[in-house]
Amino acid sequence: MGQAPTPEQRLARIADADRQNRDADIHLRELVKEARESGISWEAIGSALGVTRQAAQQRFGNSTGKKSEAIEKWAKATGRTIVGEG
Image (cartoon, rainbow, N blue to C red; front, top):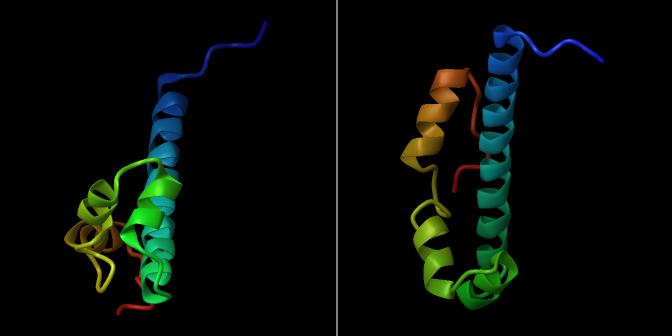
């Protein structure tokens, strides 16, 4: 039997999972932006996500044309640059 992770290892895993989650959210927002720009409806996007068109539009509608505040804060905190601003 192996040793249990140390508290530091557990915290590092949490931080890594959080980074992955934020990266995935940015990627998803870019995909939704591209889909909308190509004419795909909110209804179709919602269906792909398993939510209503209203839920998809509420989640992504305010940030598909430009960076959202949350993404800007994340980029500043992590020293990353957001490219492809609309």
